Length: 134
Image (cartoon, rainbow, N blue to C red; front, side, top):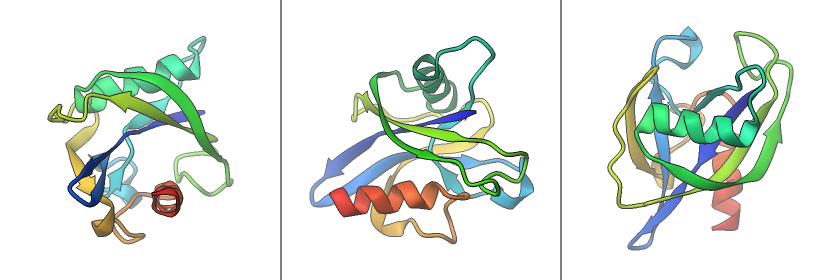
């Protein structure tokens, strides 16, 4: 099982999402944007895991995780079949992210520049969900 943190902010008239740029593992996602997240450790609550992964990959502390969506298509992750839990989290939107762990970059990214060509896997489905509700 994986968890991903979804944090947004509004700058002028533009919605931005907190994203990380993936490294070379898996190769299919190398250099693509993704929500900060990762695997839930054995015995770990997914809500704690999403806050841990957010901090490890962006240096930003989050709070109040709220389930936003679940994606579980068998081919969604080239490593193995993983069900992904996406949580909306509260963060200090003025904090500048710093890439850590297996992220090669971390940044606030405008929704308008994200597409299926530059977003890893099915994370674009969550991006589209945000676009529809914004």
